[in-house]
Image 1 (cartoon, rainbow, N blue to C red):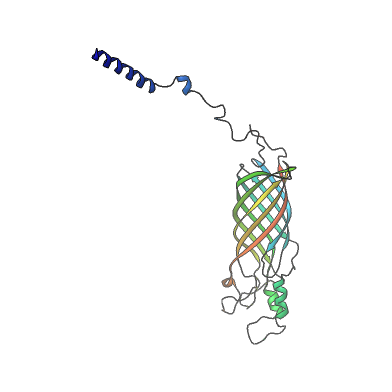
Image 2 (spheres, one colour):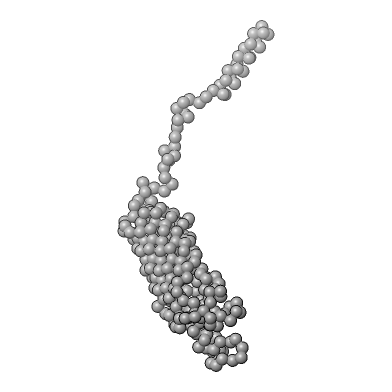
Length: 264
């Protein structure tokens, strides 16, 4: 009898353990959520992908030594994907004689006649100064942040933030172009090339057009004062140094085709 009870207990225990480790029915393993392969956002309006961008607007320089530049500008862009684009911009100065406050103060203290020291006269200082005429830049743009915001729960706008980098060129001009590199004052003119980088934002007022704000820096080798910087008695290419040229611009941009595609 005792042996029979032990055998029965063993059989019950084995059945319970086997039941705990038994595989689930095949149909339970094959269950799949209906959202497993669905996109994160349905029916999304693709405001950038595979669209051209054309913009016009106004801009200004920031932090120039002797002459401000208020500029008209144009912008072209090709959005390869929703997050990657190629762009080009051009600026044209419409205020070539817009003196900075520093320039005005400098002219007020410089002598009219040459003295015994190295202080330039007013005419020599003005002859050596340059100013921005035109600027162009080409860049690649990365758009890591996009979204939508509302004002007073009435006005809804899409937006994106982007960063860019590439190459730029600035055409410097002067009233008295320098004809020799053996003078103590010699204006640096012509195109200077260097890196171009910055960031911007689009605020879409619809699917066809947007407001675009950019901040960019074109870094080039220049000598804004056109003076002898290294003390060798001459103003030439040895006196050039890297200088930032910061541009702020506000554009109205149009996107083509006018009706963007919509995701599934």
